[in-house]
Image (cartoon, rainbow, N blue to C red; front, side, top):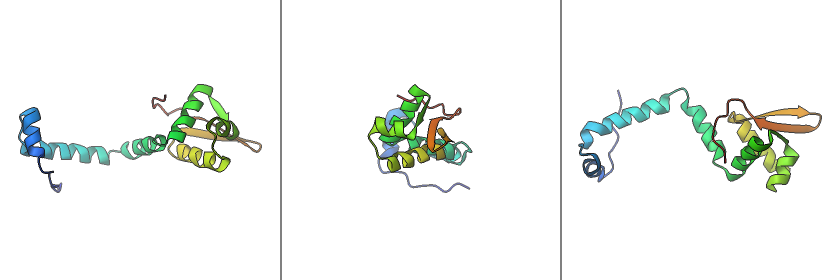
Length: 122
């Protein structure tokens, strides 16, 4: 059974004004839909991806990878002006979110967008 959450003051009046519907008829439906979305199998993965791209430097790194295909950590460092440990941290977040894959070649670490990253990038 879904627990009813408190409805913000003024919301019922805004709903009537915007759509002509009383809040009693639609708020429980919206809450049910929100619960469905949050409990879907795809929600945690989508949330991780969006959070990973919410940082300016990670979004920049992902956009660079989209344009260049594959870059080593030092190339990302040169492009962004970040320190090596900071680049490593940001790329680790993108890898953990499933947006980027990495491969090691000797002492160099190369990154590329993963095949299943279908997010629009600038």
